[in-house]
Amino acid sequence: MFDPKKLLDDLLGSQIPGTSGTVRDKAGQAVQMAKDNPLAAGALAAVLLGTGAGRQVTGTAVKLGGLAAIGGLAYKAYQNYKAGNAPAQTPAAGEPELLPPPADTAFHPSQAPQGEDEFTLTLVRAMISAAKADGHVDDEERQKIAGKLSLAGIGTEAEQFLMAELESPLDLDTLVAGAKTDAQKLELYTASRLTIDPDTRAERGYLDLLAGRLGLPDALVDHVEATVSAAKVPAGTSPNPRW
Image 1 (spheres, rainbow, N blue to C red):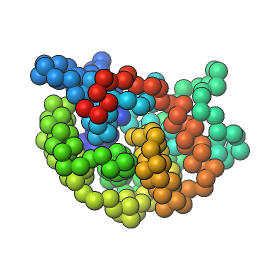
Image 2: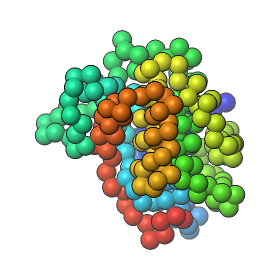
Image 3: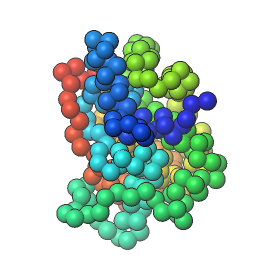
């Protein structure tokens, strides 16, 4: 069985423990060796989205690792929402770096009632569902993704899991049911929003539908939007925005 937490790290381009680079770098090296360049724009999320444009997670969020970063961003958004602060999409001067969620809160991975690995898989599924939101992942795109995943070095089982999820029809009921607590519902939405920037009606509509099904108040969603936006920077553009 593959490690769900490592896969989540790979999807967000988080640093790989024990190395000086990220899966983004490793994938780029593999592609260069193959005299091709499909992964140069970003981590596995770029493969799933089929684009090198948009924005990517950066800074402390990358260093924390996928699970802690998602929990930290969701917790930060929740704290700002409860404090009645206005959403701010740019970090304030001198603002402290993003921290993992406190261990005594429902946002900490150790508090997951279904276990860390199971909830991590739910977050991965949420990211894949978001990646499919604009409908561009057709049969031809899936074939291209399969070829590029084999270059990313994530392992056969992880590849098979991602491809199976890509080929599965959207099941929002099962996805939403995978979040067992209010904190997990917010984390699930945060992971989805980290995956995509809602530049199309389909993507915006998907996120709005997801927030509604999760029962998230509009004001809380606004804080997630602001918190995620502040954690992302423009990614390098590619001369071929799809592939």
